[in-house]
Structure formats: structure tokens, C-alpha cells
Image (cartoon, one colour):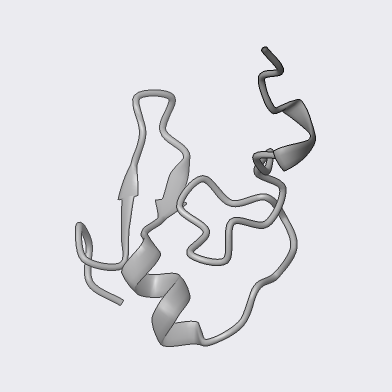
Length: 53
């Protein structure tokens, strides 16, 4: 693993994996990671909130 390519430390000192690291790993761990390329845990847009005139 290479710092700044695969991970970095945020201001609180926690190690944060990058999107590149997740893609190298090849699967989603379902821990709602900050840079998840599979968008696990992110709010999805819904077409049910269309404007009606």
C-alpha cells in the first residue's frame, strides 16, 4: 500500500482508504466507506419526486 495513492490520514488521524484502493481490492465491504466507488450507503436520487405543473 502506498500513502496518498491507497490511503491518507484525515485531520483526526484516522486512516481513510481512497477510491483507487477500493478498486484494487475489487469488492465492497459494506462499511459505508468515504470513497466507496460502489456508492454503498449513499442516498440515491428518486424519480418519484418529479415536479408537477
